[in-house]
Structures are given as C-alpha cells and as structure tokens.
Image (cartoon, rainbow, N blue to C red; front, side, top):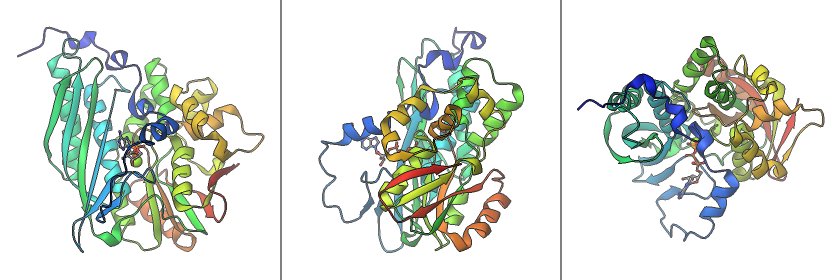
Length: 353
Ligand SMILES: Nc1ncnc2c1ncn2[C@@H]1O[C@H](COP(=O)(O)OP(=O)(O)OP(=O)(O)O)[C@@H](O)[C@H]1O
Ligand SMILES: [Mg+2]
C-alpha cells in the first residue's frame, strides 16, 4: 500500500532529536547504567563481555571458532533514506571487523514514526542497509520493526573468527604504534548537514567515508604484530583511545597534527559546527586526558567529535607499523595515518601537537 505522505515533504533529520553515533549515551552515563547489573556469570566461553567496553561480545564455540555478536542502531544524520541505511549498516558491521571477525549474517532493527514517513522512504532505508550487507557478503536474514516516535535503523550482526584472530581493544602493548584508518570530522559534518551548510562535495566526502566497510580488520587480525583493534565511533578518537588505554592498562600518546581530517572539518569546527555529543564526551572523560596548553578549542572538538561509522584504531608493533599502513592505504583507506604510541604508565591519554 502506498503512503499518503509525500516524500518531498519529509526531512528525516527533522524527525530526530539527534543522529548517528551522536545519539549514543555519554560513556560515563553508560557506565552508570551498567554499574549494578548482575555479572554475566561464570561463562568460561564468554571471551569478551562488557568489562572493557569492547566492540562486540565474543563466545568461543570450540577450538576453531569464536562467535562475535553486536548491535548498533541510531537516528538519521542525513535526509537521504538510502544513504542513512548504508551508513547505519556500515557502522553496525564495523564492530565485527573491529574484533578481527568476518560477518556472517545480519538482522535489521527498525523503528519508524509510520504516520510521518512514507512507506517508500522506509523501504529505501532498508535497501541501503541491504546494499551494504551484500557488499560485505552477508544476508539480512530477519529483523524486528516497531512504530516509534523517531526514526531508528540499524543491525544486529553475527560474525566468526578463529580464536587466534580475535583482537580485543585491551591488547595494546608498550612500544606499540597506533594507526587510525579514516579521517575525523563525521560529527562536525553531520552538524553542518543539519544546518544545510555542507556543500555537495563535502557531502560526497562524508558518504564515501561513512559507507566504506572496515573490512581491512579481517586482514589485520591475521597479523600477530597487531595487538589490539577497536573502531572509533560515538566517543570520538579520545574516548575510544581511552577505552583502549584503560583496557590494556597502558598510557596512550596521540599526535593531534598527524590525524587526517575531513577537508572542511577544521573550518566548520572553527565556525562552531560541533555536536552536543562532543561536549558530553569531553565532560565524561576529560579528567583522564592531558591536552597541550595551546590547543585551540576547535581542535579539541575534533578529538571528541563523534564518528558515526569511523575508522579502526589499530595498535601494532612499531617495527611493522609502516608496512601495515601501506597495506591499509593500498586497500583503499587513503586517509590512514600513524597517530600515536602506547607506553607504560597510568591508564590515560596524552595529546601532543
Ligand atoms: N544496555 C546495555 N546492556 C549491556 N551492555 C551494554 C548496553 N549498552 C552497551 N553495552 C555494552 O557496553 C560496551 C560499550 O558499548 P558501545 O555501544 O559503546 O560499544 P560499540 O558497540 O563498540 O559502539 P560503536 O558501535 O559505537 O562502535 C559494549 O561492551 C556493549 O556491549
Ligand atoms: Mg565499536
């Protein structure tokens, strides 16, 4: 049945109070919520639970196989329904790659204000998600759909890996180098999109990055010199580096000037186009971060900017870092950079210029 609502009259982002990984609860709020939950119990085969804020849960089936399970969904940060579907699916599958796994199937999670969105638009969201799943070589094998006040879409994704390929966010070793595989600025561009201030070439840059699968994680996890992987999403580069530092009981140093940025990110951040999540992120973990005294406010916002469908943060042996960077760039991640180091010390993050 066709919907009586004209697609041209609907702006997806106007129906949502936040969008993308900017919808995530601040890390400190999530910690509070999970504080009194009963422990998952003595499940010897649960290799990764919620202890280190890792990207997905991991269950060891047998000597050969781990099952990786994750879910991610959020409200739209773009008005094009197909693009929204693609971004949400790329972001959801990323958590499997960030554990070193290969995705095997997905379930769609859908909540739509069905009286405000034409059916065709909802179909386009689903088609966008399916297109990405096809690219990742997996089926959308089912899902669940509800009528909700704001549009929500995402996936639950199941993947597998041999136990030896499992890469936690907590395996970083002293002396490692850190590689980030995508440029930063997704939240800043989202803020500009919402205010109609991002030109077409900027939108194209945004879509190219947020719909690029982090499938390089599978290859990286086969290298024993790669010690830890996580994806940089809602908590920004600082927040996810901090999770890695805490989980690994290490101190992380990041070089702000070495990070690749979306081409207009600096200019837009200077104009104040930052998300509310950027402020919330800093408020929840800033106490564990040391910044250079002369760091301008816009640069700090790049560091806390929520990255919907951001890149992988990879901790690897310093001697292998240049080679791995070459492999990552050759695989299509031209903005990949070596951005920091891992050191012994009190868990935390120190930023230098
Ligand atoms: N409601 C919840 N109940 C139990 N665990 C939760 C809940 N919400 C989040 N978690 C857990 O908290 C940790 C951090 O969650 P978070 O969503 O930040 O990870 P993530 O899936 O890697 O995020 P992203 O998709 O942005 O990369 C994960 O271990 C996740 O499973
Ligand atoms: Mg993640």
